[in-house]
Length: 444
Ligand code: NDP
Image 1 (cartoon, rainbow, N blue to C red):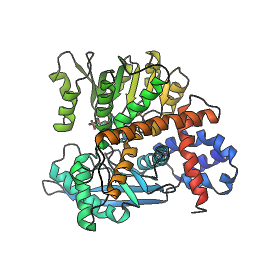
Image 2: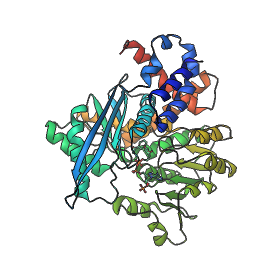
Image 3: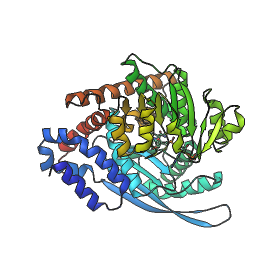
Image 4: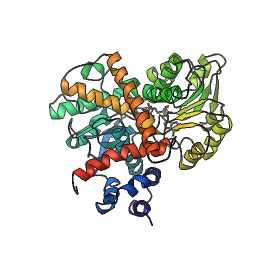
């Protein structure tokens, strides 16, 4: 049995029931065989065993009081996975589906993603099974303050720098930062995605979605192609989805469908993004409202049907495993040419196989959605330098980073004889740097 297979089997035994973590580890480890074969010293140093075991896992209780005086208790998590190349960095997710397995899959992915940005950031992830939907602002604040009252002792501007993710946007980051500052009495870059009035970076809000479109645009450019007139489907209608839609539209794409967790809207005339922003960002409402406000648009209950809509470009930007094998087959049958992942692990292992066996460009999440964390690292640089860059400067840096990521994953795939396989390319390019740093640090 190969070293990689042995580590994977062991990981499944030692982390029973953690299905999302198993899925991410399988996807990553099996692609690393060529690198491991080229470096027999890695096995002697138990490098993969250490790479797949978080350096530290913090689990805590988050008690809070709702508007009626009732006391609730949620679970809080922070997995500090790997700090070989920089302080832990990765978002916080507040969603009822959050558990240790979900946080560990996200943390493992984050290590390689952060390495791919070329910036000095390690991998971490955290969150809670708290559901922000339907809660008042005061309840959100009470929860965030309680969450930070424990988390503050584990993080720091040079130690671990969380950010947003599903259910954690500008409002939540504001409350979390306020509580950190109050307890520690220091105004530092301990969280990214901060508001512009208290140390945030221009373009951070847009960065994941814009970056996704920039890397896809680069893949298109090298094939003599562009977003112009491309029928595009974007899943989700949160932070990543909205700004992916915005940039794709600016480049001439026709985005025809988006969803939230209840169902999707189809607008053959092209999604009116200002209406989506009003519903999702301002009113915090449901996407079905769109069909009542825009003539000709239709709403369909349930999410899965969105992948049956014929399109040239698919940008999954909602959550893990939103595209299964069947949905991937439907996309391929309808002639999709580019699939680029804004969400983390949106495609199941079966779906990935379908995409890789088809004639299309498939850009996996850890490369395609790295623009968010890359811009977070730019926010950290601005915070420690006590300075601000203009939107043009940040946007230009983001674009350069995404183009470089594309080059790196393309080159890594070619170097090991897997040209065009960007899953291999992303995992290998991300891993090489982390592995080198871990070897340099000795057995720690
Ligand atoms: P948001 O909370 O802003 O939006 C999430 C969107 O996905 C909402 O439209 C939500 O619908 C939908 N959604 C959530 N769960 C499901 C589900 N089970 N089925 C269908 N739809 C669902 O989160 P983000 O936009 O920040 O994050 C989206 C994805 O992008 C995540 O995978 C995240 O890890 C990834 N990502 C985010 C980054 C960032 O900078 N924010 C960076 C890199 C990756 P509803 O409103 O109904 O809940």
